Length: 372
Image (cartoon, rainbow, N blue to C red; front, side):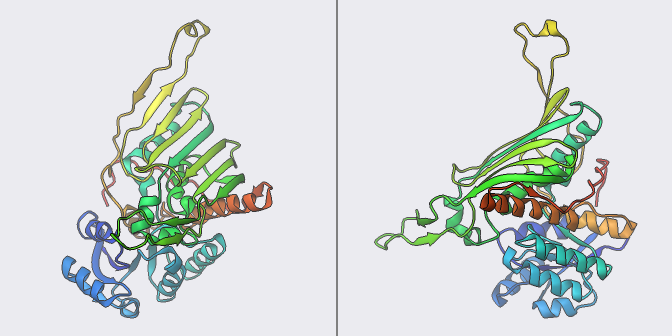
């Protein structure tokens, strides 16, 4: 198949990884142009990767570009994605699709109406770690899934200093970081039916911790949630708990566990593509109770894409377009994740359970031998 020609919009911290992978890791993608708001950054990235540097208008007018890879901050997503869809381009966006479910759903409907594909990160769930766990659960290794537990701790003080977008609405702990864990777990277990939870903004006014000599510390305000805690009931009846704590320590720590009638599976870091997948098998006979402990084993990881593979979702989407099948990192999945997060926020504000009205089809597992 001919590679899909890609234009990248946005040149932030993560852009080099996407540009490098689009250019060298995925054979079905051809990196042709880059765009940003700042002309100097456009020129620098274009020279670095040997590609064209365009304004957004030039990129959208270029009929040779098939796919827009949107790496802009979340507050710009809705405008960039809508303009790209109206220009007849497929779009794969960094997470989250937009800052709220209503606008995300509108874009998903627009893409469908125009016969275009819209995909969204996180695509780490397509990596070897989560795919290995998904296969093990599908094969019955832990029996019938009955519950899950997710805990993510990430001290944001250091990150606020260098990534100011994390202070803005739509980029709180749940929306910017919790999405990785929710996408990993729900891509295996399916959609959420109901949520109940709390969000908080701890210490919303803070001072910079950087040493600025004689200059007084800079004060800044956190304008989103930095702690989110919730109970989720899935459509399948499985119950789960999540805790996303951004007022903790750095570097981050994670715990993702899916529980079943015959064992537990411990998932790797949802912000990475690889990592170890561990299973704890349950005891099978009353005689084992006396002094016995359940054994933990590490599963062999035999799926591809174990290393840094950002852009994998776009490459898989390009293959899906060629093969005329649904793509896995879909707008429907992304919209549902945002709906769940919005539901937790609404539950916290109202003190009531929130019904989640959106849904999605669990994406097919990768075979493990795919190379895009």
